[in-house]
Length: 245
Image 1 (spheres, rainbow, N blue to C red):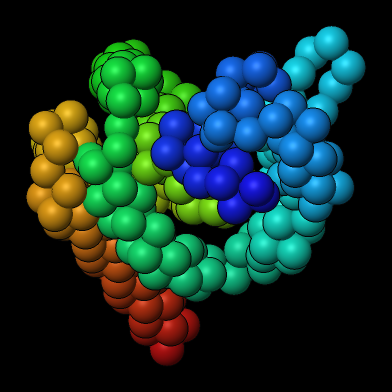
Image 2 (tube, rainbow, N blue to C red):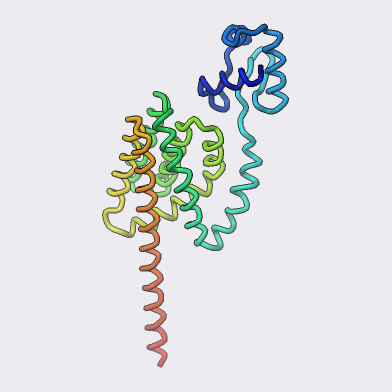
């Protein structure tokens, strides 16, 4: 019975926070008595899978956000402030997560998901046009998280959400560096649109490839800017030494 109920949740692609159908509707859909259904729901509630509230029905439980925030994001945040090299580690994680999220979003996104992704993309464009880079960075992260939500993979969505603060920091730092390179926003806009268009078209492989191309561009551009800045710093130090001789 528990397995049948879990299968129904998966078939209907219910996300955390979604309300389950009424007991009567569930019992009819599963072909079981309401007593048997109630026992199964109580077992799922005991495992933290669903939340049952009197007169409000049952909802799919949220994953343990505080646990993942404490175990994943919190220990990394101070390290990133001390050593910017961790920013490159974030890129490697994003390369694994974003491509997978885009792939599954293209396969599973419904109308609500697609509308959310469009709105996040439009917000990025408008905020950049207004010159608000910090807000644009936040919108950039929200765009990628909208894609994660559209994947309808609760674990993937939760992991990316728990890393939102790190993701925002990574994107903010990246934007400050890559905007030092002329015409990069045009390239980023084209790449984000490509990811979005492939998701909306249901092209899973194309969406994953577009996400990979985008992150490779950002990573390589950031590294190039960092190398140029380091070279300028070395040249300045050499000039200072020369002036002292």
